[in-house]
Image (cartoon, rainbow, N blue to C red; front, side):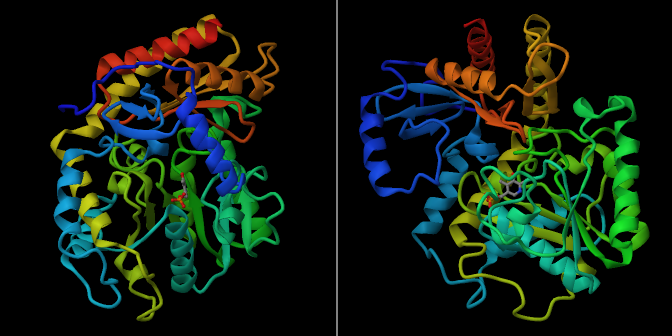
Length: 444
Ligand SMILES: *Cc1c(COP(=O)(O)O)cnc(C)c1O
């Protein structure tokens, strides 16, 4: 792919620089502190694998705005389609007077979502709204109320989705009371499974099945909601066999399997959707983040016989499937297929994993290296064999990366995971240089 901005790391001021610090002062006076920012450099441009700031710095992007700009920031095809649309009409509300691009996005998602069955899709604005709607539909279609979520899960910040989310701080603390009928089960976390990673998948699945059976009764459960690789929870890849076992249990008991692929979707993990890795066919799939190259869009895709149950007018929203966002999504799907970005994501993983494993040999505080495709993480622990999480060292490494011009994110229930989500179009040289910077950050 050709780039508009030079694909280089260039640091000309301290990070953040004077102009960013000025803007930060204005922000503090205008925006509540509850809205955080990982790195308060104020962005003026972004393209390929770089983000440019108000002080003339160019940072290597290992975040993609949290797995959103998979096809690159301001991807030319996205820009072209959105520009053409913005000059025609910007909104009619699909519930008032519809337009073709909305239908086309739904057709594409029905084609791309796992499984050869007949599907339906409808569009909303955010990942949380997609998950919220998936649960509404599951309850409607099954006539059941209970919903199962997992340890370390993240599903959003609305009342229902924050309830589905596992972690108290910062997502839930002080925001209760929470939504009823949400039940949390153990997740197959290989690195921290007491009897070891080999036993993790089957044992965790057996525990979850046992608890659902004993505590809830499968006949009361509408849906299980799970991220095929956990995002905010720390890129935890459930041990092999866990997801298929849960999916089989759901199938046998009339429970709907909702795959929350808001973070893992759109080629990120080396497949279009992470479910494909173990051949999982979800009943309902939620997508957002990577779907529209940065324009706000999300989707709920599901089996036609489930999606078609809800009465007319029961689903929707003023902005859901905005025409600009739909054009962007159609461009994103074209770009993923045209440039074979699933393959590209795999190659990014094949570059990153060996280098990170080599780094872990040298730095015993790297307890685990994991992930698939361009969704890769390292988990930092106290290097004394205890696996005690080390969020302080994690924050220190992140700060050192930022100071050197590498934008990285942290994650994890214990805040001790560094996660890497480069745009899938990042040039190889910049990917290598980003890993060099990370190595330097460990060295001091
Ligand atoms: C980000 C995320 C959400 C919430 O999406 P928003 O667009 O921020 O509402 C839900 N589920 C997962 C897995 C996510 O990563």
